[in-house]
Length: 69
Image 1: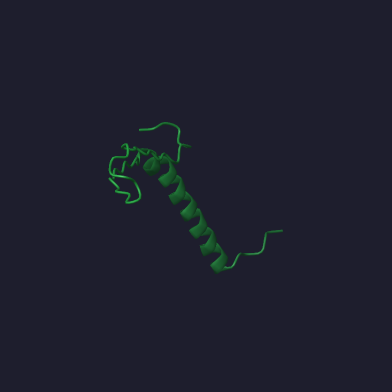
Image 2: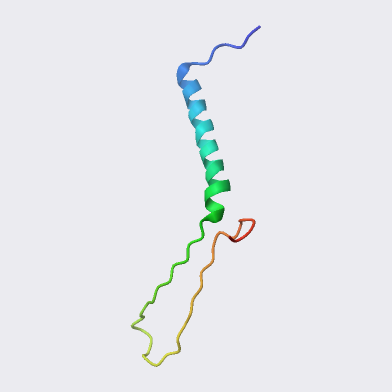
């Protein structure tokens, strides 16, 4: 006994989901590991005194990759 045929809308939904999953997999394996962004800004904080020591802040995120660069 063969399974009942799927409707055309369900089939295209399945194709779309597979295509989306493949696109996400390509992005996660080929694009994202090589996309390291360094942003440097100088911010002036009016609440600090002019003779306050210079502060350097570092924010690192998304360290779940296998290696950096």
